[in-house]
Length: 316
Image 1 (cartoon, one colour):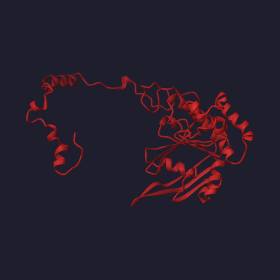
Image 2 (image 1 turned 60 degrees about the vertical axis):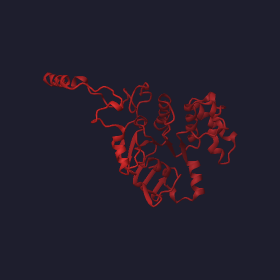
Image 3 (image 1 turned 180 degrees about the vertical axis):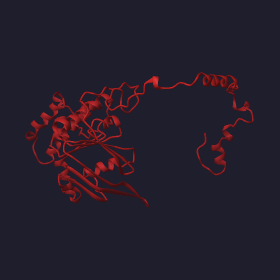
Image 4 (image 1 turned 30 degrees about the horizontal axis):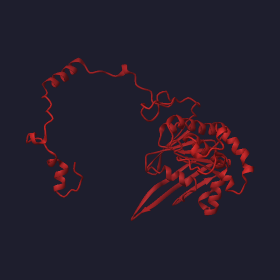
């Protein structure tokens, strides 16, 4: 078992109030698993990711990675552990603008005291693997969003990390580019046995993993194991398709056939038609000065009345 989380709790103080961001979270992750963590805003998923990455300390509970309880480390030990054993992928890439793609990928190892000549061959191999062989000498402002995120993925891989933590990795990308990034992450887990934990609010993004943890109010609400999707199996939706799982997606809900929808009986339809014919004609659009007394004006609106009674709600 690579990751073991036990009764993890985190409480923040806001003024005179305590906010429980995590309320006893317990789960474990096997090597080579691609785990998606979903939940509404305020569910605790980002706080959990920070605890797993040693970016924040829990109020109580334990985080054990490869047998090491990271919450017991001091700041220097935790910094070294993050740099050498964890890979991070962020929504906004976090690339240094003055460095080339190759230098950004090599950065975690350079910070560990190695020379660029020592790590350059591996960085080049990673950039080639993710399709950026011809972009190694480009700086971030010369790359597209998808290319920058792929550089960030290569940077996360440069140290051969035990665990890769991804925080909304497609949140700043269009659907087509995001699909490419998600397929790359799935391929890393499925074929190269990298262990990935990804926080996302997007059900479609979450479907690329082989495990889904749903959170609510600082607790795990559901935990589902699943098979990996076949790569290149997801069609990219047009801009008119509603958010969520797209038509043709292997985990999209099956639409109900139209012939299963019962229509109202003829007599019901006739009753509606009769009611419509007998209904009074809609009123004309009159100026406020010509409205009949029974028509409420803005001055008599509930908001204005409330205001006159001491309620300071905004008026129209």
